[in-house]
Length: 86
Image: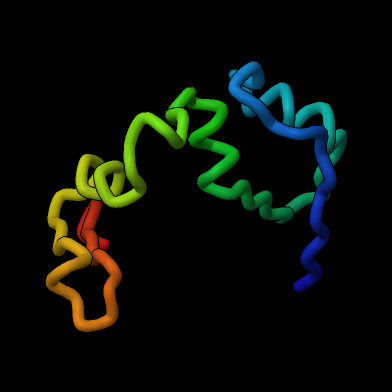
């Protein structure tokens, strides 16, 4: 397997169409190629971003999770969450 990172411009909330970005930076794929896009890039393109002063990371995790264990209940001071059975 060969992994090739693709450098793009800075993806911002103005970039709404992931397919336009892919078309711009990946002009042609060979048969049986796999393209992986990080969840952060997908979230930005979906508009699923908030200003960091408006909430906390833990509140966002709890809001998105189906199951959530708060940080203060963890021996190691981290929260545990489950979404989509994962």
